[in-house]
Length: 128
Image (tube, rainbow, N blue to C red):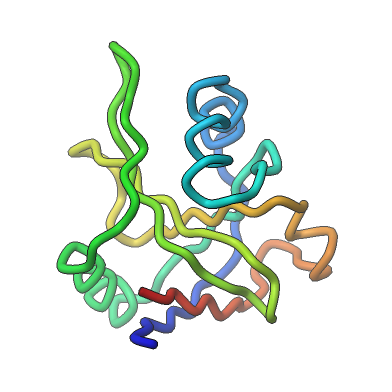
């Protein structure tokens, strides 16, 4: 199965992912399209320059689109794993979204399950 592997450093975000994942229409689409109910928050990973360049390869892959309600932008989901834990990478499709960030969603609180703190190095395997 084709895959892309990313390494990134955990950092605390602005809680925007949490707000997005608490929206009913977003939760429903993720449940239907990814087959899990997302934990209300994202694991934010900062990418090195090399990994940021590699992230461009995601644009060539067929992700799973989260169709927005009026006033919101779409996002694209990619099935993934971290340490054999089911998750997904979500890429918001708006122009100012930073290219050096990966946001990971999961049915569980990843920081807690994996014992992650800011600065931890994490490997994400995205499968297509």
